[in-house]
Amino acid sequence: MMQEENSEISLSRVDTWLEAHKQKDGKVLERVKEKYENVLAAKERNKNKRTFKDFDNDELVEVFGKDKKGRVRAMGSNISRKKLTHLGVAKSKLEQHKKSSQELASFKDEMISLVDSRMDNFEGLMQAILSKITTKSSAVVNSPVSDPGSSSVPRSLHLSQNIDTIFATGGISHSPCPVPPTRNPQVILCDKFGKKLAKGYVVTDATSNMCHFKKVGYGEKKVYVEEVIDPDAPLFDPPQGGNHTFAGLVDGGFLIWLDCWLEYV
Image (cartoon, rainbow, N blue to C red; front, side, top):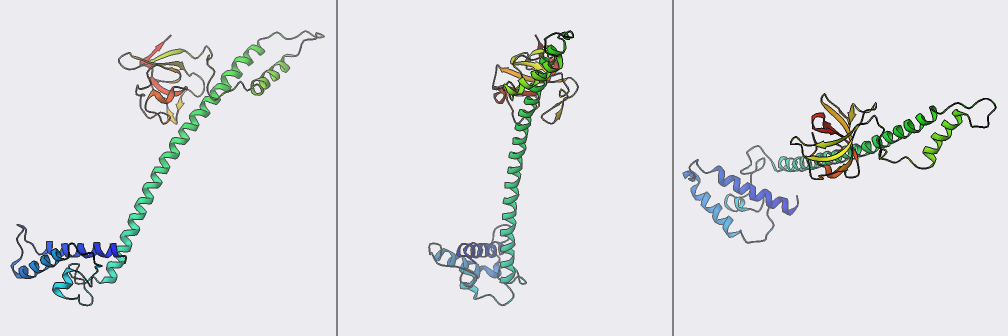
């Protein structure tokens, strides 16, 4: 064993023996009173000495002599030094395992937070694609069909070029279109006291029933935040996307909000 470990074991052994020979009221057992005082005196003498100590060189050995084979005084009559060594190794491995488990749990929490953040961005991207394709495709589909023999470009070609233009011009961003489709009602997010916290719109497409892996419940709405009024205001049912306040939504983002706390504009 290393010196530090031996010192801790020796100190623990001496203290264990001293405590074991006290009565409940703190008085020392009469039959060991002399030995008890000798151990205390030896401990006091060695208090400031910087010497290597182990089971062959501590206050108990100084008073009682070396331990008999098969026992370690103050540790039990059937506990040998070899068993104590094994116990020390087992304790060290247990502490290492506990530390590794804590580090693994911390890493798991970080990964979950990262996945939530990435999924939030992915939802924003898909919402933007859906909004742009729906808006631009509607304009093309409603255009009149060209007459036979005319020089105008066929409607199907318009649609193909229009979709290609959406991707080629880089018009798609990771956040939804600043001006949402008219079917998404504009709202102001308020708290239960009516204080205005943010502005945005209610999501009404196929993704409206899920947000950050949570199901949007009865009386709740999935909302995209476009403008934050009070960054320090707490979110409803946090965390949402790893955020607890509106500070994490200053650049936009999805959340779940109570319908009764929404002010439709």
